[in-house]
Image (cartoon, rainbow, N blue to C red; front, side, top):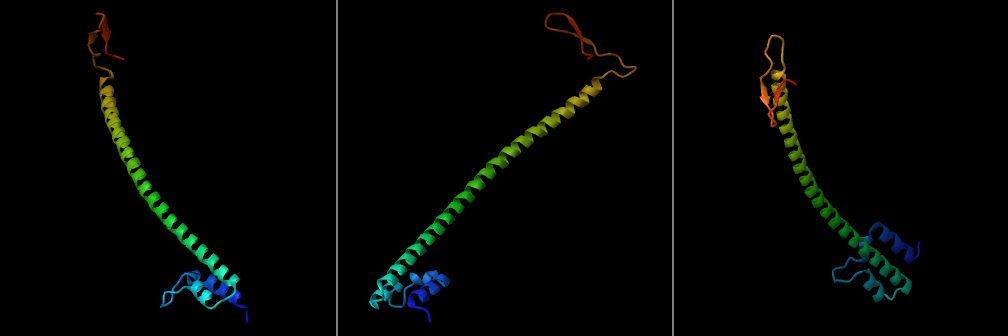
Length: 133
């Protein structure tokens, strides 16, 4: 059989939470080790394992909070990007509308055989200009 230290290590590897769990009387593994007057190296090992466990728990909690903040930021960014995209798309639709109207008016303005050219207009300087391009 292995010595106590090795047994404790195996147990804590399988169930790290055991180092901080309390029994029905409210005592944890470190308190039991102290009451049993175990070797100070075992008590120190339990203290170190407890510290590692708490640090891992703290890191996990911070990661959860970071993930939650990241998700809310992504939602905000996505919403902003979606609004910008909608704005751009509506602008493009307006441009398409203008293109369709100007191309249809341009094609109707073009002189086809047998039609008269459009009448001339006076420009700002008083010169006569033709609308035919």
